[in-house]
Image 1: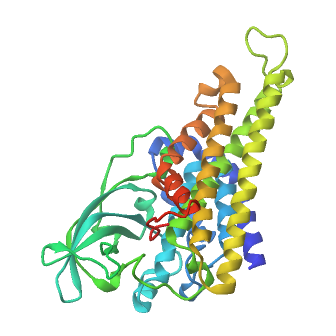
Image 2: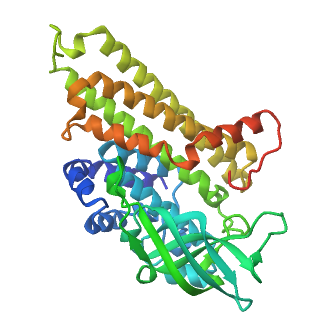
Length: 386
């Protein structure tokens, strides 16, 4: 695993110059070009979390986090597409063996949306009539198989699990059976191709679906981590990578820029030095806490084969905090850059736009603070999707 980790991180670093050079292209086409997605798949990035038994790398969560963060320093959109493709590979751990082997062949890219915005009518014969439309389909145009979450109905009524929660299943279909809507006209993370995806009404067998709450995954330490937890870990990684890029960009700018109305270069001003130090403290402290939290949870998963509610709580809070701290650090650097920050050629403006789209993801939003706050206070809380 150590060899895999070092190899993946070296590959991520090696992609840096190409990602930086093609960033404007990604934004212009509003998606990750197919050749770039294929390069990432060939590098092993898209299969980092896919079970080894199905040809994946099944890396530890800290390696996953570090690879995503490294890519984000060069380009946030590319890193985002990688983590979506990689976390989608976790689905293989929940699928029936024969279905997982059919779908997850070498080089396969999967993607989709876990949120249950579709409907699946149980037909009573092992199949479902499925239809739906989902936002935020990041990277799906490069996927071979696309997935969408659905609420299940039976005899025209919502199907409920024994726990009292609604039955939610995520269905996988070949790309050819998906409609892509050109909706991704946004401020940041433009290159992710997070367009709307739609499944027109179609019959899908249960074997091509998973219940991320109700089904049991493979009994491997990695899959003790809930998919939602792995997703948030990566969001934090993207945000922290963007913050690192913003700090580096400002430091490079400050050495040669003298702000209008000032005699001293930007880097010689006390305000610049203070804000750079503050940004470094924000990013480094958030990064240390996030990595420590992930490492502690990984040790528990290896030892016990499961994560406690406390571990899942801490992961969500550390990632939410990390994303917010990263956004604050980017804001500090963007403001220091002054007028230089607004040009399309500036890395600062792209970091600013990208990180503020990342903060809008529901998994690192205010509801996470409410939920984790309840748990710290010993109050009842719904933790099935923690």
